[in-house]
Amino acid sequence: MRYTPEAGTTINRSAEEMVVLANETNETVKANFNDIEITANPGDDPNTIVEFYQSESRRQYEEHINSPEYKQRQREAEEAQRRHDLMLEGALKMAPEKMTLRDEEGWKQIVEKNSDGYGSGVIRFAERWARLMESRIFNGDTVEMCAEEASSLADNEGITGFMYGCAVSILSQVWVHGDELRRWHNLKTQIGNEGEKANKSGGVLNPALLSIG
Image (cartoon, rainbow, N blue to C red; front, top):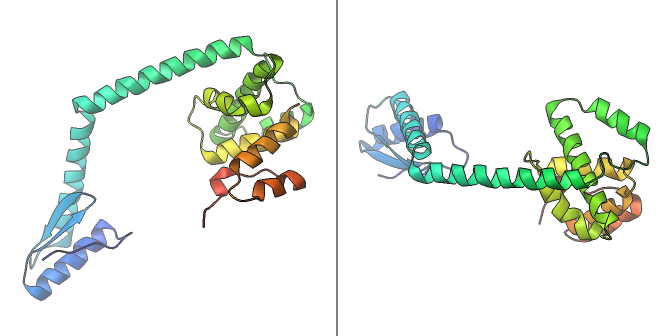
């Protein structure tokens, strides 16, 4: 007999329900939980099923991380990161040492209020991004022409969509080209016309908070 766990059901709950079903039908009950085959026989202890599942999960994980394919992907990822870091280092050498601020006091306050790991990550990304864009703008580009490419290059820490939106918001307040960045970002991010509305109101869309449908 097959048992199909509902979405969101834990392994503990699934094991309990499988044992109940096995006892009621006096049959062996099988299920696939996260690609691991588990079995419940009449009279089984649900904890034993859970322990088997956890043990098999660990075995598969260790097998995966020790596989030649995984190690090759790791080497490729490390090499890609090394190339990215070298490109970023070279680009920053050609960029201004500091971004050009239109609100130095505002920037100082933002930095002071975001000294934790998450907040400081946003600050570092925002400053790198602005410096890279300024370098491109000095050579004739507009914010629209360079913002997306510069953001990818500036991200060497793996920022989230929410962090990206926070960086736009910060730069829109303190950076000399911040309003142009805000307007570009809102139009690029919008699904309908919410970006146009944000541009009129002075707001900043956060891509991590948008939903479709």
